[in-house]
Image (tube, rainbow, N blue to C red; front, side):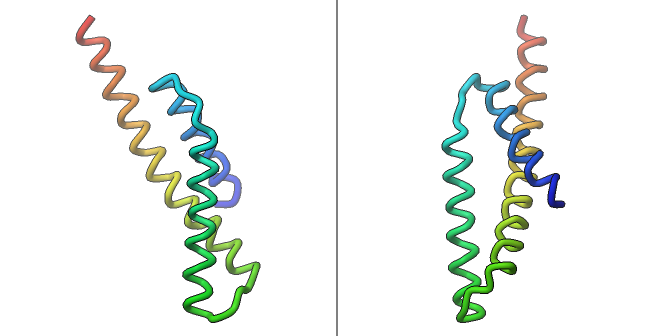
Length: 89
């Protein structure tokens, strides 16, 4: 899961470039920053202290889940868009 998270992040970025021809790496970084904030906030509410190792592990897992779903969604959109372009031309 460690390396695959990074690959999903890069794949989502590449799929967005391929489908819509847009470079929005800053949005991806912003999403990751928001994910980090949420993980820290939830961890603090539950444990009432910040354990850096557990927060980092939770952040990585949340990003994995988010970008895995984003990858599946963008992959589906890309396939549907490609099929639609082929059928309409």
